[in-house]
Image (cartoon, rainbow, N blue to C red; front, side, top):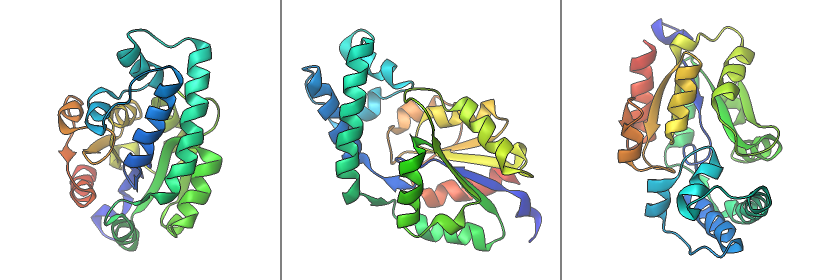
Length: 221
């Protein structure tokens, strides 16, 4: 399998492999509407979005949402998103890139903060599940950090070296999680963040998933 046999990619799902921007902004605005907030544009979302999600709401409200407000917004967001994700597709070229990485004898997995029990059938429905050695979504309440999830994810893979692992995601939080787990990261501009807000993470930033895979190959060498 050559020098790259041990290279591993951890893919983010929402906004990276899964092009769900329209569902995300619609669900966000539906949640805002519950608190009487004005809708925002995708450009505003990409400029302001951050994790944990309550901090994102704080940027728009001028304060952290109360527990009751957070619960209402969270339920509304997920209900709307579930209805509208059905119209979303994989990011252009994603299926071919996944197949190519696997056929080269390299491993890959998915780690997402999307609900695990909804993520797995979604991945399966696109016919790409076989490309991954593991698919992990979120178990438990929403709004947390990805860093500890990343550590557990890599530990569960068995035989995958974090130093030869590259996380490909669309948010600065993906880079933070990678660094926390001893891995590298490449950030993609087609999802929840614009280039300017990604570049502060100090890792390579690319405009296509094809570029991300080339960069991952270089970083894992």
